[in-house]
Image (cartoon, rainbow, N blue to C red; front, side, top):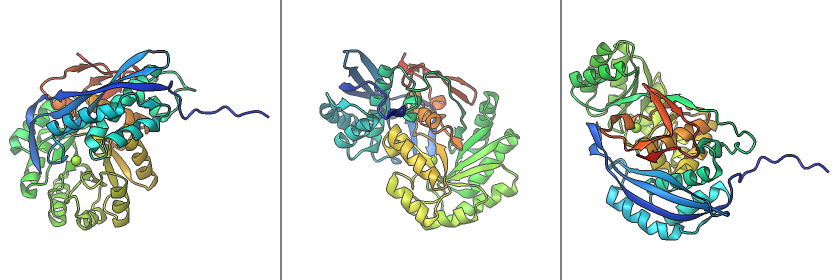
Length: 380
Ligand SMILES: [Mg+2]
């Protein structure tokens, strides 16, 4: 009897976790990040460093970002540092035989924080992929045993315009356009008339602009639709409308979804599998925004993305206010999915400093993964 060639489900070399450590990752923003529900001037994240060792004693270091964005996340930086320090004891010497072990270990030691799990799970799978000498996205696809060539993956991101005075938003947009961005994710949701005026100013400043609106849960359904009707009658090209209504206002989200002429993306209303079921049952979105910090890491995000896509939803890949480390982790999920409808992985370009190197090359709005093992990123 001939045994068919097996596509291995556990293609990485068996390994164990040697250590997990977290340190503050506080990087200033060039512009205050103002959204409907809050403001950030400095990132409030934790950089997670995982050391993994294979059976020959070879070691690799992996990185992950646990990105707090209060009040979007209930976690804040001191809380994340404490949780990760505590979890590191339970993770030491954990055995890694297949990918699900990384998820199981983080769920066991960090049951109550998706943000902390995101940083730790990313660092573990990054270290492990580096031991296996393959880019993380190929590990996530579980195809690297048969296809070893490191074809680079590319994607185009939008750039975010936080809520500000209309003329200032227009000036920022003009600067981004000169740097190669044509697609703007515009934060709205405080006052639809002011938002409409800002969008008009940006459209006048950048005539070829395309827009993704993000209300960050700030509107009633009526106000959300008033803004939509206004900007469409102004002639703006709107690719999608993210989280128009409050997190728990699925009725409002459903009203907007039914009437909108563009896809409606659930972000704050989509934090995991149970939310996905609720959104589908209520018809409260036609797309979901994937973020590692909400969903608990790259493996969980990939599984939920496949479920959402299977149910007919479109996908956005986003992040909190994250550095290159967190954005790369999501970019590898995008590559593993073979692309998504909208990539929103721009926050590293909004920071005053980038303390990392490797993993990607960026040209304007285009991101190319380098094909280095794991995430390929390292502190400078
Ligand atoms: Mg959002």
